[in-house]
Image 1 (cartoon, rainbow, N blue to C red):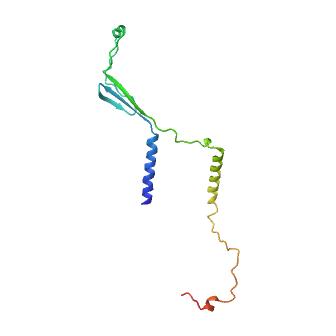
Image 2 (cartoon, rainbow, N blue to C red):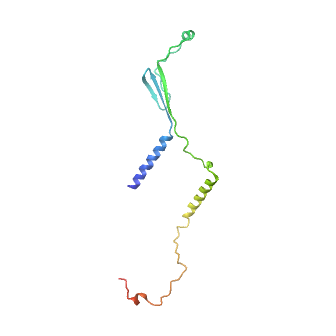
Image 3 (cartoon, rainbow, N blue to C red):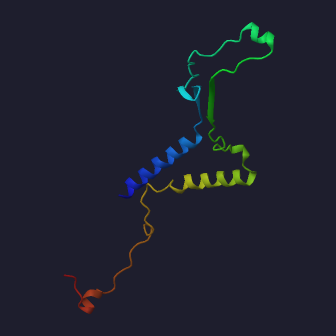
Length: 138
């Protein structure tokens, strides 16, 4: 149960980081008030109703507005998630290096079985205590 909870929590956190750092753009083309096309990947296709300005309208000094419009929505993701090692102060770099060195050397000699009384001989028995007190293990 605990392992499943940790897996679900880690997946949720990874997805949260992914969605907050992802940036995307939505392009939309409207003809009047109706949405004609939208795209997440590339520029939208137009409906073909854009009016070309004629030479006469340029000569007269006015131009009619087109009924079509393009709208673009851009969502920027966070860029400040990466921290560089050279931004640390000297004291922080020293702490990280010392912590790494001591953590690696912490597990270095644990493969062998340490017996603290290996070099000592057992004491001589002068008398048998169990017989003296008449205490026997059954």
